[in-house]
Image (tube, rainbow, N blue to C red; front, side, top):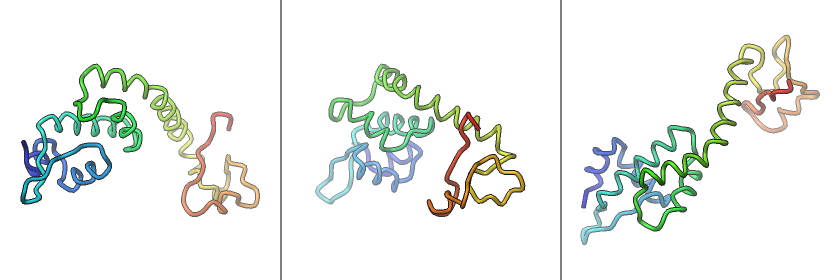
Length: 144
């Protein structure tokens, strides 16, 4: 069994992240009589799985959904990662395409609907985007 400090050091994450992952149901621990968390060594692979999924752009909710497909307390295997990562491919392809559209049109519009630019490629009569709240709201579609 590993202490929270040991896991944090080995996984290169903050102890607060481990507590958060636990609250979110991504990892689990047992408590000592003194109330300290203790983790099975296998939690390191589960944390690596979470962090790798986050690095490719998945939300914690998407990661949680993927981990819920595994039997309780089982460490993700290489085959699990391969199978789950294939299901994420269409999502990642859409995100990549969206980022490419933003990159390619970044100098023409910031996507906020503010109409402060001299030439705006967004049609935004009467500042419809402003009614949705502050900050960027829209990204340009391929048709634009």
